[in-house]
Image (cartoon, rainbow, N blue to C red; front, side, top):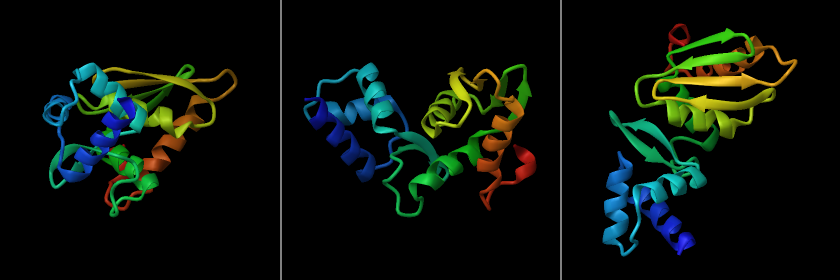
Length: 159
């Protein structure tokens, strides 16, 4: 059941722009999958889905689904549009995002598996990136910043 449901999610995300989990729940239910929003949330996380901006809308995308965005660029593009500010403090890096973007940026940071990062805690518009003992947070901040600055469409002064 789970594998079939996740295959259907992949299909839906490829067929149409999906802007919310509740929209995806409706699509899955109409396809015969009796799901809840919590189930869809877990499935999206397991599939590595992230929200990206396409044609002026924020939609769910899979890391490898878009021919115009190779997998490595999908994370970078999301960062370019979602990371507003970075600041090192103590053994952490504080990442500021627009409201509602904290979870997706935090999840992307987790999937990036940055050397020296013990984990992240994401809120609505802020992520705390906790550095491992002995790792200077400024190094982690520079790494995250380099992902943002590597994109030609992003103004490096904004991050």
